[in-house]
Image (cartoon, rainbow over all chains, first blue to last red; front, side, top):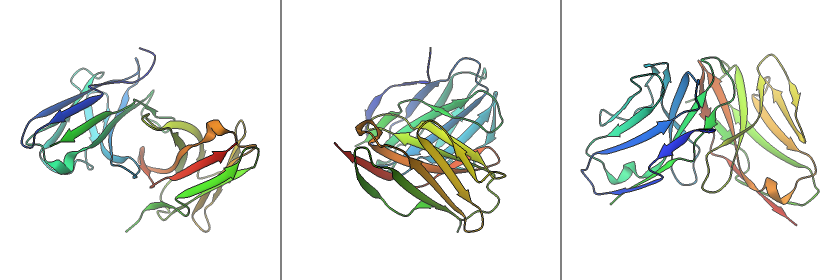
Length: 114
Length: 110
């Protein structure tokens, strides 16, 4: 596609459930980022992939959060045993290379944990 | 701790005026800075960037100024239009990871 695609756009789940959020980056972009944004706040870094490997996962809040990018394109953010505090918009962004430059963001997946 | 922040959470201007949005950063190791615009319900959109070896960069209607002495970044928007109404974020980058500030809401009155 022309831009970064994220699915689902909205997800409502119950506390304790497992959730997967998908990101389809711009074709050919090697770098992929996940951020989390709470209301009234800036995006908070979670994890950065360069190709298939996680170059930096220091932003993942705890071991309930995990992300993969097995073929260096689509990425999935996985959240186990969801908590109400996980409610936020999860943003994915991609960049053409691993160097500095413009990040292209998707429109986000809004997660609500009841 | 080190952080990226904004001086003004909300800025209201009249259409046609120039707007200035400020940002303070505290990590002297940051080497690349970006301004993003975010409209309601959408992801952030790149506006302009600047590297730490520069102090000014101009784009279309926008200028970014970097003052490394006081660790300050500003975004100037000329002839502000209603379509510029959004939340603006500055981000500092180290090791290819942008860290975002809280954001400033720009409201443009027609």
